[in-house]
Amino acid sequence: MTRRPLRLVPIAAAVSVTLTVSACAGSDDEIAVTTVSTLAEPTTVGDDVFDVVLVRRTAIGFGDAGLATSEDELSELWDEWEPGVVRPTVDFDRDVALVMTRPDDACADLVDRFEVTDEDGVPTWTPVFEPPPGGCAQPLLAWLHVVTIAREALETETLIRVPADEP
Image (cartoon, one colour):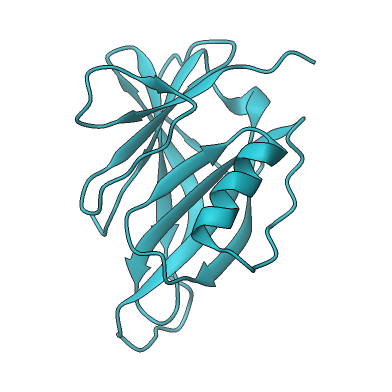
């Protein structure tokens, strides 16, 4: 199986850095993913192409994002962000793993879908977070989210924009 190259592009950067992840609190991150076709028009991507595999409180902060395309990359990221915590299992032959942190109240919002828009000819995926039913207490906490995305669902050049905070 041939792996498709992936790269992270911080929103303020003019050039991309292959397989490097950096994030700044308060800014959006864009992760560029190279795969096979082109998006014709804006759309919504549902849970048939992604799985939320983990949501947990974390102490690593807000507004971080990483993209793992292999066991080694996820292990390296996990050892830095969540040392001593069992990491989620990901089938990297089928999926990539988007790992992100964001602020929220005591009941973390969950990734419900991705909105896919065309940004100068490049499909841009943005996770849409929805609150759990019922409501919750309001203390500000940091939440870690791990979402796997099917490689076959990604486009020739795809940006994944991770909002660092509430829109």
